[in-house]
Image (tube, rainbow, N blue to C red; front, side, top):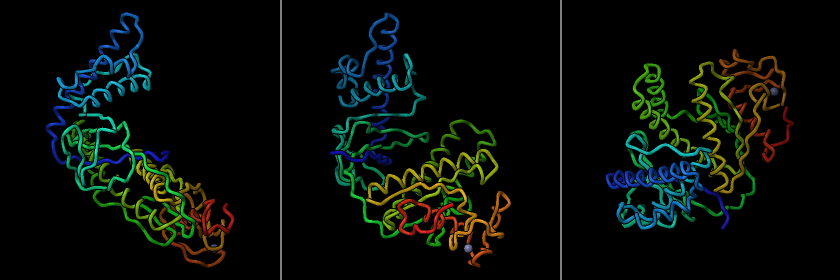
Amino acid sequence: MTGMILVYRYRVKSLNGLLNKQSRAVNYVWNFCNDTQKHALRWGKKWPTGFCLNVLTTGSSKELGIHSGTVNATCEQYAKSRSQHRRPYLRYRGKNSLGWVPLKGRDLRREGTAFRFAGNTFRVFDSRTLPEGTIKDGTNFAQDARGNWFLNIVIEVADVPARPIRSGVGIDLGLKDFAALSTGEKLPNDRFGRRAAEKLAKAQRARKHRRHIAKLHARVANARADFQHKLALDLVRRFDYIAVGNVSAAKLTRTRIAKSVYDASWSSFRDKLRYKAIAHGATFEEVNESGSTQSCSACGSKDSTTRPKGIAGLRIREWTCSSCGVVHDRDTNAARNILRCGRASPGAGIPCR
Ligand SMILES: [Zn+2]
């Protein structure tokens, strides 16, 4: 089967104590790999591959109290990380490392809404349903900065044929609202995520402790991911074609922290749209949105004398095109221009730029 590789993330409800224990055994294996590597360096021997490390650790799983697939996945990840980072050896894993228990995809099975691994059933918090597909290596249990355990499932799902394009939407990502759609809808920012982000910014300014900040970071990331998943899913279900602007925060805001937060948020949303569109047979396109705010989506005029311009134009929420007289909501107009600028757009007709 050839298909798309997706990662599904579930917060683990049960057996966190067991995972804490197993992650210490994983650290032990990891550190053994690091020692083996250092030994090879010191004595000028051939550097061990993942396969070599597997051979050296064969039979250790029972004594360590972890699945043999976990031992293998740890060894293989060690070798992979070392070559990816082009390092002669890596850092040891200790009590400051976030918990991690990798496994082989074949060893994880679904059991209703829970998952079965190495003789244990792991219940997870209600979340997105795992699609049909093959669970792959790279799947792991991992802890976040708050100490919560997550199950990250790497799954290969079959490609879905693209739907014929009958409906389309343009999306203008923004600061005031999360997005404006070409349909005239406004999607508000998620309140929980924004409150979390404000708390984080405050803690950063107050130079709070690193661990505290890491916790807030994790909270913001979780809230944001959840919010974006839901929005993206809703959009790919409603529309066959989705065009989103390639906005960057540089021209919209002046503070450095805000810029990076917005850019990260927008690019992760575009990624989610892209993946979900493929999974649902919708067509996704990222459109160069320069000029989308200033052109009239009704008549195509680029030089209406009343159009919003530059940073000063950011405050203009509504304007009337001096060429055709149509009244525009600033962001909806931008979203409509983004839609018609897409190559596969069902509404394409008026030339862009
Ligand atoms: Zn006009």
